[in-house]
Image (tube, rainbow, N blue to C red; front, top):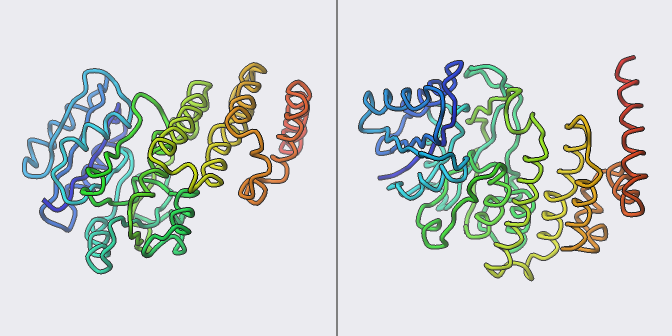
Length: 340
């Protein structure tokens, strides 16, 4: 079989989201592919919808079920274990793709000999095939035969995993999988996976539609989700160390860890929750300093972190209390300006 498409599903019955996704998959312009939909213990009618598609498209759709919710990482791992395809693709169950999405990605792989192929995507807020705001998922500087410098670029910015196809043999040989039972599993898996592929190419078209809605993971901030991002950073560090990448890519790993564990988490948590916890803010700072005490000297940090964020972080390095007070004061000022 040429391709296996893995679709993690959890409570996607509302608003026709799941049907729109599946319709885009069953109508692909290629032959010889399978759609492995993994119901992750949904409590709505998602499983009934999946069973309906399985009965109508028995040659294409295979449904697997979890009795206990394992989040997207667990569902993807279940799909990987069942996949028969030479290539592996993933898609979020509230997103969708153009009819020739996989034809174009597989065509690029055949044309170039790549073992990983991606494309750009379109941000939309409704179910449509009209292209919205186009986002470049990876840069052309990251493509081609992957030497150490290009692997560094991919480790730094691996891009979304759902907007790629991967050679299955590499996944099997390197025992690649996803963290389970947590949000942000791709933050750990994406950079690590990218280090094992030898040739990356991309189709410079927005063939994937990323659906933005207010209940998505990126729009709803909780301390639990922040802790999952911290856990993803810890797992990224541990996996890189265990797999022998830590010394070769130390600066890149230091920056990715400090960015995921601390910087992104801190500046999504503070404006995202109603009552920030000083204890949690201290924990963030202590966690990154324990692993990388001089992260603020990292060249990627100096180059990529915003000047205002660096200023806030430097203040926290001197006093957590003053930092929180100062940040909340600035936040109040920003809100007053926004009202004008």
